Image 1 (cartoon, rainbow, N blue to C red):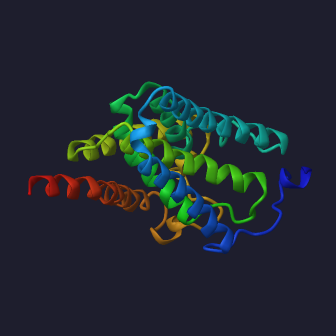
Image 2: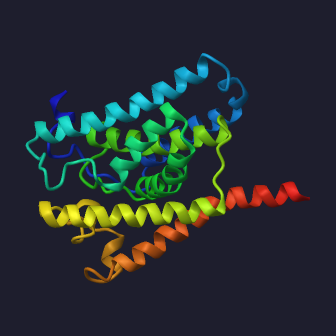
Image 3: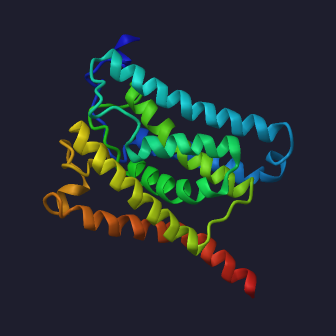
Length: 240
């Protein structure tokens, strides 16, 4: 059992391997079930059970990551606090499930779902494959962000607006500025805005620091608009 929690991976992750594709398929089926049974899931007490269960899965997954980093001796203030976009989106998505706060949804849908989808399509877990803890945690945490927000869309009828796109982009930039200051004082690299990650990533194609930050801004904004398109098309369809 310990081999699934060790620092060194069990085997390299292979992009779009059968394992990767099946993992994404499981997430798709869960979300499709939310849509298919949305009317039933609005009823009490099943609504509370699902929302609270999803919230606790997200919270426990974040706690388990810190436990694992501490266990293998990799937990540091400079890199392990929950200030990466995935971590803060996960925690806010858990709060969203518990509170049904629409203002939180405007941020977590765009920043959380947008970043989580990109992360799952091209995961930064090159040394870990199923059933290693890091692989399981990665897809539960990122998939949980997507599932939580789409639960709010399909079951709770939350719908972002065009204004939500710009609000999310503003909030993301304010948060990025906060993280930039945090990195300066802690000598850390949260959100990879102080330097590129060691492992190969899309940042390698966007120029040296700090010039890669501007293309990242454009990628984020374009991603926000892409995941807003279904709602835009839905609004146009209703007019006819």
